[in-house]
Image (cartoon, rainbow, N blue to C red; front, side, top):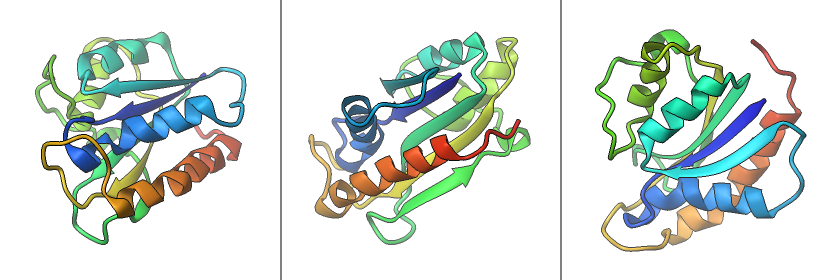
Amino acid sequence: MILIAGIGNVFLGDDGFGPEVARRLAAGAPLPDGTRVADYGIRGLHLAHDLLAGYDTLILIDALPGDGTPGRVEVLEVDPSGAGAGELDGHGMDPLAVLAAVARLGGTLPVTYVVGCRIGAVDEGIGLSAPVRAAVPEAVAAVHALLRAPVRG
């Protein structure tokens, strides 16, 4: 089973990248059997609990800090030992805290990837900046490439 999780706050500009990519994936080409796409927004506790269902692979789609060119898509593999020990906030989304919470809740972290996009602005407001909006199709393609890759785990 594969979980594709769009995360981010659609009310903070480019932070809405994850939910937008998740929306496009859900409405686009069919995904392999056993694949679920969900927009978690900022509901970190919900994501942590859903991961207890025993997924084999998790693909997080998220905005990455603006340390680089806005709109640059990156695919990262998460090292489970580096998942952090941050405090899980029931009203927020710190991806590393969510991943660490899975073990604290009695689950096992699946093979985890992040398909991220370097952001330009996270000012209050709905809508992605032009470079981040232009990166959405590339991120969709990156997720499809991960789905075609052999599962390691």
